[in-house]
Picture 1 (cartoon, helix red, strand yellow):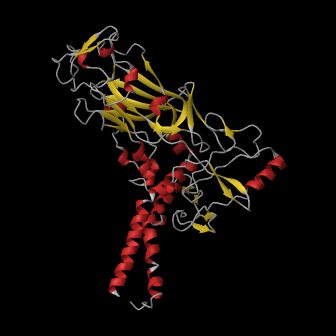
Picture 2 (spheres, helix red, strand yellow):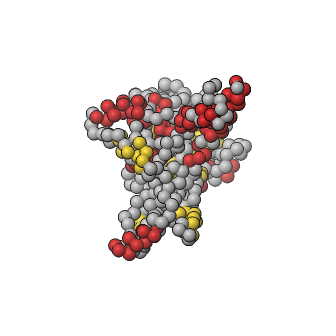
Picture 3 (cartoon, helix red, strand yellow):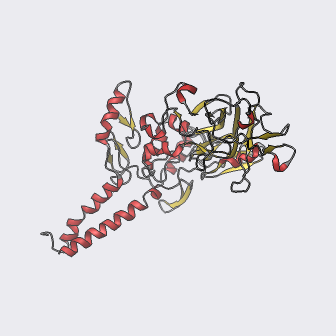
Amino acid sequence: MYLLQVFVLQALWVSWCHATQHYPASWGHYDVCKSQVYAEDRLAWHYMACQPEATDMTKYLTVSLDPPNITCGDPPEMYCALENPYMCNNECDADTEELAHPPELMFDSEGRNPTTFWQSTSWKKYPKPLQVNITLSWNKTIELTDDIVLTFESGRPEQLVLEKSLDYGRTWQPYQFYASDCLDAFTMEPKAVHQLTPSTMLEIICTEAYSTGYVWKYDKTVRFEIKDRFALLAGPRLHNMASLYGQLDTTKNLRDFFTLTDLRIRLLRPATGATMVDENNLSRYFYAISDIKVQGRCKCNLHANSCVFDKGKLGCECEHNTTGPDCARCKRHYQGRAWSMGSYLPIPKGTANILFPGRGRNAMRVHLSFSLLPTARVCDNVLLRCQNGGVCHHHQRCQCLAGFGGVLCETAQCQGDSCEDLQSSQLSLHPLPVAQTLLLTLLSLIPSLLATRGLTSL
């Protein structure tokens, strides 16, 4: 009898481990826009939310520098090492390929020896600031999916601002400030991303973590931590993507935070390695960047799973009867309902929000024919659990407690001071993690397993 108990518990444990191991993959990647299914003895289309695969977006950008003549080499110039003012063997000459350092070298293949990099002129006009704006433009709305990483060949700047634009460079908003002394440079208290909370994850911070002046072996990079901000909603290993997707669905500010058309790197003060600038050797001070990584995808509003680069422009290959560079308009003759973006929910295939042909009565007839397709379940008590104390009704909707809304009751509906009260009470309303729920469900099967063998007295 004891051995039977051990066997049952071991089987349950293996099942639980297997389920949790593959849990993140169960959310899918939204890479299919439609599939054929049988409904009422006929073949029909089943439509799903979809998006392009994340990729290296630096392959599709254009880069511009301000001032335009800030790149070294015209006229040729010798540079000295920051840590050793007497080691001056770095020459830049724009007319010699092996000695030139144009902006394109920030985006070429890494791993070559010697390292390729862009380099600015030296700080020869000190005390006038040595400042450079590097603007990356896609001429298309994109969504960030991973950290932005800048790799410096010189010392990392003592002051830097990362900015974004959502309107093709007409207006700019700061993403993050970087400084060796945040209070002195930007009158901001230093802060790290891990100090943020879900309610403050969109806060613009100044960090001192990436501004040491000297080039150490592992201290060349400057990061804008996208995944650390994702983790504030999805958990440290991004296992709870339902929470992140739910918030992206219902919170426009959150979607916009990870969306841009242009990125601007403002280099405000080069590494000096000391509190005082050595005015007798200004060739020690300059900027040099060997690599920029921007991982993301075209924004297609969950209406396309591919994005093409044609004639120098990115564009979504729209589905669901939508059109436009971002699939943000109704296709001609498909105004049967108002356009809306697709939805990540319900997991794992989302909602396409497909557009229907025609207007008025004709549109209603087409809409009814689409409704013959099988209905996806919105909620259940295992993977698609209603949040914040909500109750799932017939797998089709969550009945939310007062003060909460959204498909899975994931959004706090509050005003003014009442928000703080709701957020403080949310801790007591959060359901058990999925892994715990699954384990408890499996353990609840033990009595029935034992009963079938007449062992209920164990």
